[in-house]
Amino acid sequence: MQWLSAVEYLRSRREAGVLVTVAAVRGHAPREAGAKLVVAATQTWGSVGGGNLEATAVERARALLAAAAAAPQMFTADLSDKAPADHGVQCCGGQVTVLLEPLAVRHAAELDELDRLDEIAGRKRGRKEVDDRHKREVRRVRTDELHAGLATLASAYRDRLAAGRAGTDCFAAIRDAAEHLVRNPNEALLLSALLLRLSPPA
Image (cartoon, rainbow, N blue to C red; front, side):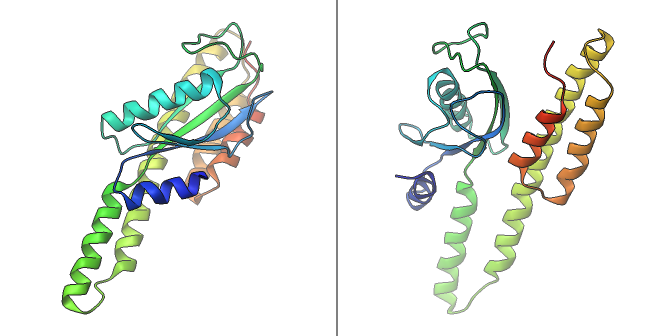
């Protein structure tokens, strides 16, 4: 089953899930940006590269499920034999940023209830307005989470700048990425472009 079919399958069963996406890749990695994995309580579909990276992604996704979290999260993994690894070592040598997005089960339930009321009333009650509201909610949560991640990244580079291990151009790159978020960009491409502009770890 492909990841999109898995999303529809979970929604049809009103089961929670998390969509895992390789948001950005730097250097060598098992999968390119855009690779996807769907995680449910007991099953997974698709792949983001296997090994420690995928096992960590599944573990974090199921933690989101257990907490009934709605906000997306991001993490970055170094694929090096020197990097901490709870599920085995991956030696590709690159760095992968992963986005975890809880699927909107509540939104699906609201649309089902709207459909039920429409059937009773014999008329439509503004599904487009509900769809638009759901999209705004999802976008707002995603943007807030990405802004928080960029702020954390800026803080790390500020420390590197103080230690003489980074240039001021890194801050410009992070600032530009934060500003571009308001234009509803392709987030995977935005993050890939950002990582290409940042100086490599010292």
